[in-house]
Image (cartoon, rainbow, N blue to C red):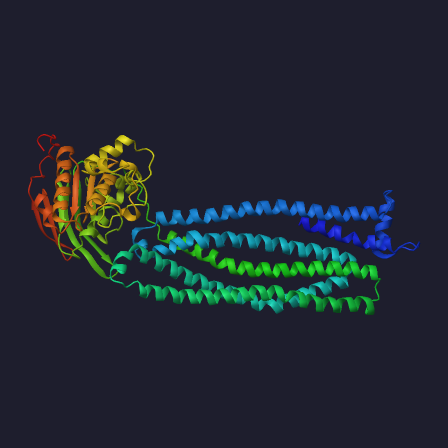
Length: 559
């Protein structure tokens, strides 16, 4: 606003300047005369140098104030962009597990990248549009001082420009939506493809995906072309509209109103400046419409993730002195029952295996135990306390979890074990690697724990990846280690070695182990076997008497 006033004052100084330059000795009249009388009243002599100085100073002040404003806007834009990303990450990390199952990973990548940038751009364009609207109001006030008729002409020209070019604003917004929609689909598809690229290439079937991507790319290209045309057409048509309206305005001022040429010149300058600013505001509105598509998209992603927020189980601190009990637990996805009235125990200090065929509900029992899902009926007890009444985050921190689908990051072996948490020392890492039976192969690596494991651990064998995953699960000294089909994809010898290592660890430390597996190796080695079929517990085999006091951990020698 201040920059607009400074520019307006600078431009307004042209009127007395032109009047002074064309003065023939008579006292000037009108606005110029009023300005001269005002200056004389304060003992200031109107000179060409004075008005030129006012003009230059006004423009310099406008530039300075604009730079200050744009600096603040730039900082705000960066804050908005970062805040959007952090809000999305916070919402995603706090969402319940069922939310992720229904979302493509690429959707989040696009939101954190392009859509967050669009959100910042939308804020920037909105701020700039607001500034231009303020400048329009400032110019209108200055023009009103000179001539209310000229002000009406300027408003009329602006309305004609806005109504004529509004069609291109609508086109730009429509094409931006289409472009955003197909870019999201393209990124989501590419992300999924890269995760499972190896089998696609092995079977030579990646060509179909190429066709799909090319189709999306063609649609995006077409939308970009229309959007580019709409933006350039909006800008290009402003000048002829302005020229036509300016010609009409000058004709009316010179011929109909018979104004002085000097006043007409200054009025023309003010009219051009005002209408040009209206044109810039029109371009700014178009830019806002384009950028707001990404802004709205990331806001919707944040709101949707927040609506799936995991309920906070703020309750008593958990203990793990006796074990876990499932009591008549039933769970269903939509209308499909997965677990039906399941009852069994996972005693502390022993090795328990939940076995059964594919689709028996084995993994779902783990998800229920970790609070990733909540049962429709029945209850899960930790040392006799319902899981719903204890602090869920604290309970999860007491567990070590190794899934079937291992996720190793493209980072060092050390970072994959510690997950970047600074509280773990080198000794903690070595202890976890030793406990997982991975010290032999790690010691043979050229860079030891500083070795980069490759994307998804591609530089390691399947058994080596599993041992690193077990080390990751053990580094924080959990009370219970959960192995969810962790050895299913391994050869029998590697599986047997891992089973033996885990059993030795359990016997020597008293660690409770819950293994989910349909492989007979785990069932043979366990103290306690629960068999599921169709979500029901069909048999429970107790090989030790855990109704009595839980045995103390055996020494390494006896183990």
